Image (cartoon, rainbow, N blue to C red):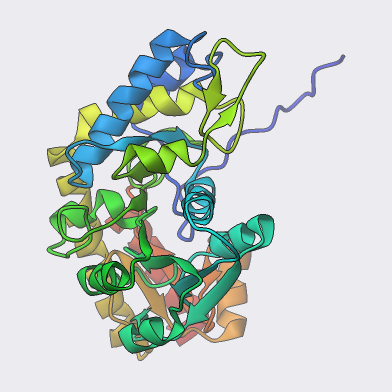
Length: 356
């Protein structure tokens, strides 16, 4: 086969403002390359990467304040959220439903469709779950209540201890989706972790703010019985059962998770959070000074009302930006989104929005 004269190049991140992925830490990149051909989906055969996965779950448990964590490195937040719903369904007799705020990630819609469960989405107040609405939606067939620790649109954190108390009172399992926020929340003075509430399962993604290589999601459980509820027999493998949703998995994701966490936890993540928070607050203030309506950031995501024609012009200028469900321009202050990047973005914002 003839090689193309100009081989495709990876995405440049210098104008990417909408993504929750970011270039991996150098140690994570190197570790991923070393373990590209390994499959933690068959731990008996690939014992080395299986040991690394135990270390990865230990580190993720430390970040999420779970002293004896159970879980595995998934393909991402979607798989981990589906697994939370699947475990709850398998541990509950009869037809079941899942109750979640309308701010929950769209992966829960996928989970409901795939698993044949009813998804009940309830309203939010200022982007956070409405406790009264959640309580009203729970009934005898509810298997799982979902809370979000860092919503994908606005970075909001649900009142997790209160939701967990409600779930415990109604004898319902509790899942926290901290796919994006989990690596910043230890430094953000919020109640979100296993130490803050009676949480059964959590999604926390190393390939987002954790700076691991893609794909690397995290599924954590408080008890082993959650994983037992996911296990299926695997008669032709050396390993006799498997808990993951996918079969073959990425050893690269496992190894890069360990490398990134060991390089950055806790001080490196703290520094990145503080820098991102400062950038988000600065960008929000600059947008407000230009007369734009801005949603006050809780975690480092900025949403601002921008006219559609201006939004389209910014896209045509090369900025990778997205809209919230309500239509605001959305900027995610990931590690690659530096103050210099935001200054260049504001210059174009002035050109296409304010006309200055």
